[in-house]
Length: 248
Image 1 (spheres, rainbow, N blue to C red):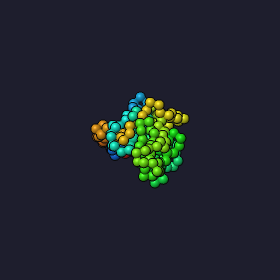
Image 2: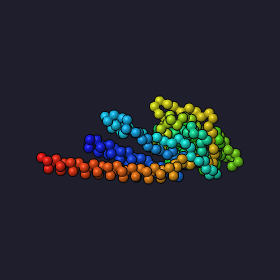
Image 3: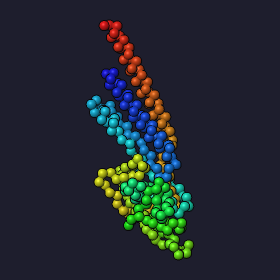
Image 4: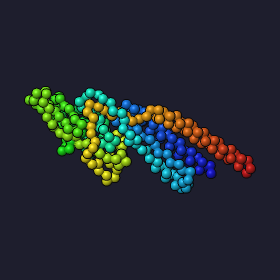
């Protein structure tokens, strides 16, 4: 009975620590473009058989809040926000992997590649998008990229590509440790049909600071309770052993 009590409280404490780490990461990304807050699923194990509790506790999942953040106008030509909860930009990571993001703060490399602020290459519908370095670039609501080509006047912009904008239900996507989104299982995002971009704007983080601070305080209280219960259980075990030694 004592061993079971210690085990339950120890695992409960472990869950709380994980939850506090998740909340702290949310707060650290409160100003990160298009950041999606994570929350810890807490499973009530009261009705679960003892032999199954360990499996359930270890497999509690972290879920990502799909709610879009606020749209903020920046006036910058290379900033784009996605209008709609199901939209993503297709990118190629620096390791060559295909990923998806909603963070639309873009830049142009010295080689003329259109990249995210993290350096991932923004993919077009026909491959990599390249533009002349140092040229004027604009992106319209459909994801079409226009740039000033060599020899053209500043008032003339030509189409150089179209951003590969895809759509997928948030439940079919999972957030990786790198902050990008990846399809679950064999699911493949489809080309966006009704989703548009908002030029010269960025999506903000969807972190709710009040919720996070409230949960952080509550988690801290729960951790104190679990620590106290474990200490009391240990003290009771010591007293029980002392009584057994006296009686024998």
